[in-house]
Image (cartoon, rainbow, N blue to C red; front, side, top):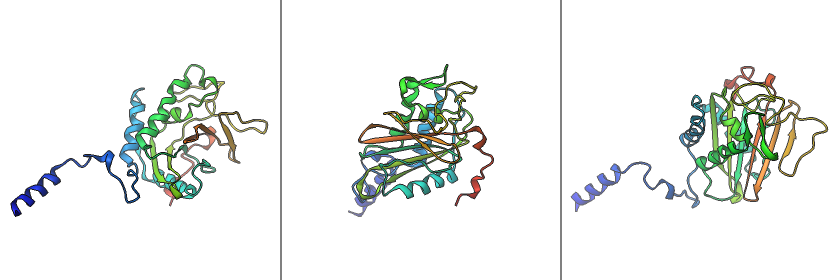
Length: 237
């Protein structure tokens, strides 16, 4: 009997660590939260389409994302960007448990079909800024978090990027344009049925999009003068 028990233990230990990972559940009966490697692989898969340099994972950016996510867990569905952030930021809230890092980043990357690189605009009043942030050629680092909202209200994903993308009137692959992916805030700018422009004192503009009642996504645009290295990553605690 001891020999059989030992053999069974050896066989279990020899199984790959990722075996049946999609069926694992945590103590609340929900799928495990996404890991950094999942976020990073999903981002770099999209960047590889354009032969861009891979992003590297930055734990300080991930800490920044986590800090903001923790402040939003009681009200995830009211998607809000971190105020005065010097970083690029992609947000996603999904009600269903199937959402994970790979699916969320793939959804963002699907906006490639909405982006016109000739005119540097999102086509037909659509949104493409999550995609352009991912493929922004000067962005080097990313840090993300996948958090469970309180009261079983879904999943919140926050990704921070350094240096930020979606610089006003610039394109993800370089150049200056008369069109803009995310427009700077202005006093007479009105919201459309597809997006809501959130203004703050730094001039950063955010676009929140709701495709269905089950998920919401958001991205940000930045003025060029707000980009790092003015901001010291080491100051984040």
